[in-house]
Length: 181
Ligand SMILES: [Zn+2]
Ligand SMILES: [Zn+2]
Image (cartoon, rainbow, N blue to C red):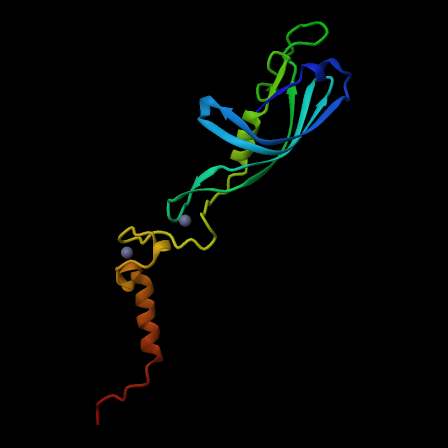
């Protein structure tokens, strides 16, 4: 997700660009990361670099934590990051910036791909479910219960639960008179 910012850098701080991206590829090869990005991007020229503000959507693929199926789901990201100069645009001297600050590429390009990747990672839900009511896998035979019930007897699946059911059935039964006379 590369933006050519050479022209914007020649303008004074405060100059800006607003654009819409549609299915723009974001690729981070070292992470095996590849997405299509859609949304609004705002680039602001500041005295330290380019400030990227973006409201974009990606479609990561997750593995369902219940049924293990892979599924894609849209994720909305709100990115707000400075991409700092690597060299001072006037003196051309290298500029010291924090290690975790994003950098411009050769004072020519802004590559937002890694930022998209990191924001998407931060937005990853703790439990990834293919749908809220995913039935999951049978713990006994491994059948995907979203496809329908398996052949396992219900009491085998959850012994604790069936013991409870038995107890409640016993409590609900009418008093049996004891046989003593
Ligand atoms: Zn699932
Ligand atoms: Zn089963």
